[in-house]
Image (cartoon, rainbow, N blue to C red; front, side):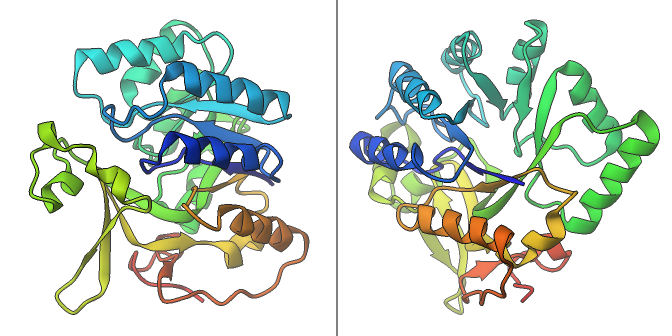
Length: 291
């Protein structure tokens, strides 16, 4: 298995993003995803900045993928999407079906992002015909479902000739909305948000009435309150998953990546904390952790 760093889901200052990718260039991740996937108002880095980073990381020996938005709400966002798809050098991760349409019309290969709902072999084969070269598994699919889906695909359509990637660490992206929950949490209107999400580099926690972390608010994105951590399940993913994705956090991302790489080379039992979960993978409640 290989390892990837997913696109940064949060809104970080430009210098912090650039410093992160300087470390990524010498990290053990073979694949690096770049770009804004949550909110078009987040413009610390513009398209030319992302492409410059992509070129630098490619020169460092990484396979770079440009990630696109998961929820498009305006013609201007479609226009930006088309420009990314027309970049001419880098593969695109399509996180919205409109990106799939643009890329397939141009007969360009693409990565099918986890925000596109694929739950059966027929849908997977449809995407493959459109040009999908890699499938990022939706976060709510578990081990047994994925195993059965792969078998169904082989039975119906033959050998799988695309990579399968799984997000194995990070707060799970659960939903997107036209409303901005971070702005609302500060009693701001979405159109007058003052880009307040930059104050929350790991999102903003929401608690249940009994004080448990329930969700993380990240602009228009709602994430799991607990951080997914499938490190103990890595040995059981051989033959099922091709690429393991680590979702960037403000601190500790590369330490986590190194732990996953070490786990692949020399499996050991890791103790999960109370703020880590892997319930979906084991077909139990998403907030629960299977030790």
